[in-house]
Amino acid sequence: MEKEPAKPSSASLLQDALALPLPQSYLNFVGRQSFRLLQTIQGVGAFALITLGVTFTKFNTAWRVTHPLIRAEIERAGVRLLPGVLFLGIALGLVIVGQTVSLLTKIGAEQYAGSVMVTVLVRELGPLAAALLVMARVGTAIVIELGLSRAQGEVEALEALGIDPVHYLVMPRVIGLAAAIFSLTVYLIITAVVSGYLFVFLQDVPLLPAAYFNQIAQALVWQDFLLLGLKTVTYGTIIAVVTCYHGLAQRLRLEEVSDATTAAVSQCVVGCVFADALFILVYLLM
Image 1 (spheres, rainbow, N blue to C red):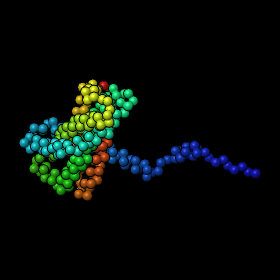
Image 2: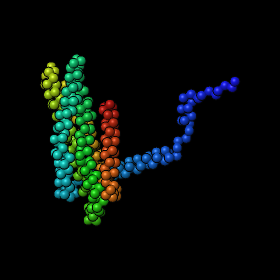
Image 3: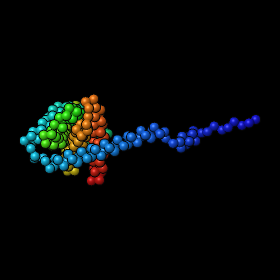
Image 4: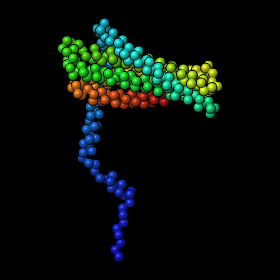
């Protein structure tokens, strides 16, 4: 009797599948996406350099016009979002700080509460949460405002009048968002620390207020204050530059404004997370 041929094993089938060339359509898709990514990085990078150059060279130019715009942007991105940030700080204090301190007390490691809160709240969660809130509430509005202005020809009208759109439209938003995120982060951290102790107090955890705040003060170092300021300013700059780029630097039709807003939000999230990873490396190297 003739023997039946042996069935190939799953490992050999997998090796054969990996050896096959990729479909042409898949390669085209990857190539197009990679090319678009490089184009976006190049465009946003060039726009960021132009914005920073205009900010440093023309900050006091026409200050009677631009400085009120900066204050208005700080009010929109900072003062108006303060109730939401306070609510978020209370929630983070109850959910994260209070439960962390309670758990550490139960296992006899309450001496590490200050270090944990500084690492989680001050260095990471506080600045990132404030930045994402500003991006969701103000960043999307910036793309829509500038996109509509671009689509309706208002930007070209400013250029015809000899007004630099970057100086008039972008610079106030960059400075305003950077200052707003820094201020909101400070309020969020203070609110979370205070509300966290209230949660600890309600749970009858034997931790005095003096010991609680003393642990936090001892865990803080001067690098935390420096990097907190740099991180929040970086987040504000990234959000303002990316949203202004998608709303201003490209010619848009009215029906393309929504797609530009979606792209700007996703790229802001990626940019902030990437910047946060770089700051983590700086923390580890210091």
